[in-house]
Image (cartoon, rainbow, N blue to C red; front, side):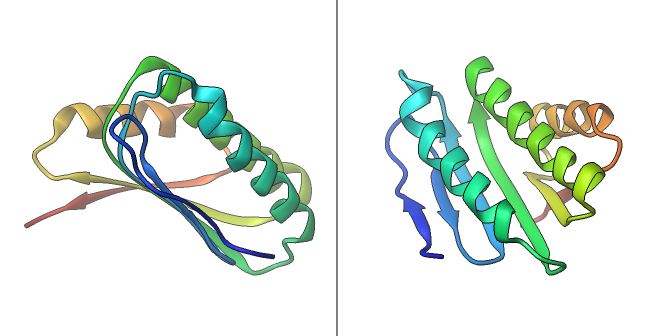
Length: 127
């Protein structure tokens, strides 16, 4: 499968989707979330269909995101959790945050509490 790279803009994060890793980085408060999320979910669904037993890692390093982006992330995590629960996929999410950014850490904790089957790691980043 070809990689999916969406470069960051003023309002959207950089998205890098390679053979075994999906990465979000930067800020996410797009005016039209569908323009950002549609290609990501299309690629993800196609990728998950062919994913075997190899580990698929999602790294989220967002410094700011709005409520619509939060909903998109929750939908993403729910979709991944379905694959783990129903199909035994090996998927890991790393929520990466600055060690002194308690707000982003708290959002990660809230996402983590919603998930039962998906491995969701809180990963503090230090300077």
